[in-house]
Amino acid sequence: MKRPVKGLFPWRRRAGTPAFLNNMNALRLGHIDYLNCVPFFHYLRSTGFLGAVERGVPAQLNARLAQGVLDASPSSCFEYARDPERYVLLPGHSISAFGPVQSVLFFSPRPLSALENQRLYLTGESATSVNLLRVLLHEFYGWRQIDTEVPRQPVEDLLAQGKAGLLIGDRALRARRQGGVGICYDLAQLWVEHTGLPFVFALWIVRRDLMTRQLAALQQLSGQLHQARQHAFADLTHLARQYASEHDWIAPAELENYWRAMSYDLAEDHLAGLELFFTLCQRHGLLPHQVPLRFVPAADSAAQFS
Ligand SMILES: C=C(O[C@@H]1C=C(C(=O)O)C=C[C@H]1O)C(=O)O
Image 1 (cartoon, rainbow, N blue to C red):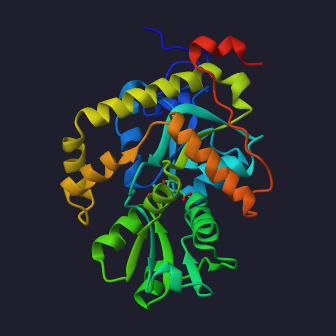
Image 2 (cartoon, helix red, strand yellow; image 1 turned 120 degrees about the horizontal axis):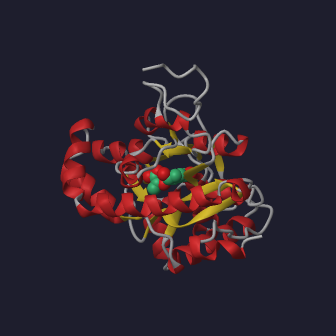
């Protein structure tokens, strides 16, 4: 049999080439490098998703979204709010909590009421949670001044020295587990207690200019994420066992409980919580503008988007 002339069939896969490189329209996704993202990503490939996936902490993914390096990513809702003209949102998906979230934690040697004027050390991985802390302190604890620093050394070291600081993600989960770092405030719990609404930490943020070129791919992605989440929650015990064996600092039951405490939907209550957070960010000078919420339209309403 004659071999095809090289380059004549560019759509044919070369052996060893990752599938996404053969697909010029494939999406480049961000993946938050925390255990909270497992329900989105563990089964995503098995739903047929062929794009590229790049891992990072939220601050890195925010920067890559802003630079246009990533097409879409679960990332800080504050990144969306910072530049809402640049982005749209995938409907129906978030990383939220209706109570304690367990992984956005402010550790303090003293009660919050006795801490004003002390320097607070903040994780450099966050955009949402650092501003949630500011909103809570201004709005509900009456603080006027908040002195913060993102330190060069790990926040954990400063906590061990008796300082107050904020951790998110796996590092927060680990620090809580290790204990011995003063009072531990769960920021989602404080938010829910004061507002009666859930708190939305992350949204699926999409580069807005993709709406014209890649609408169908984005709608497909949204469906694939729903499928991946359903699959994950259909056997969460199994998934927790698998990931706990790769992360020896968390027990399977704790991990399962952590995922169950999280809400991955984005429904009316979530949106009310999100809008209140953005309004309070504006009130306290953290955002200069109102934040319109714009979504990728569902497949059957695509014709309505102009
Ligand atoms: C619930 C969490 O929410 C995270 C907090 C973020 C932020 O503060 O910017 C961004 C993404 C989320 O993963 C967590 O990290 O544990």
